Image (cartoon, rainbow, N blue to C red; front, side):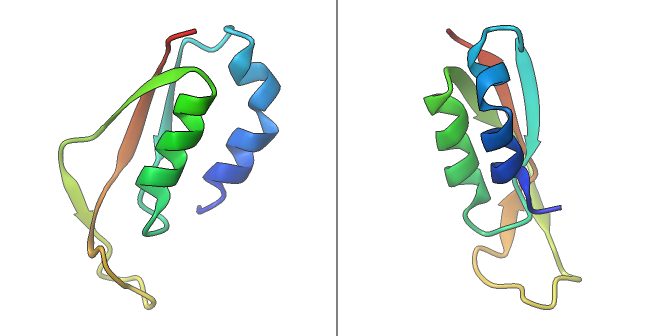
Length: 79
């Protein structure tokens, strides 16, 4: 629920070992998640793609642009 970057950082050794072939990461909790989490995954050796549809988090009391966010980053090990 917003700690995806910390989780990826904690899994760094496992993710760079080549033992994880695919991963899915939520990218909608924070406005910059799509760009930042995608960059982390690419730096770890994954190719990434984002979901094609968008989410509107209308219940978020701190909602700020971008109002529409991609929901998911799919990552595939590229080595």
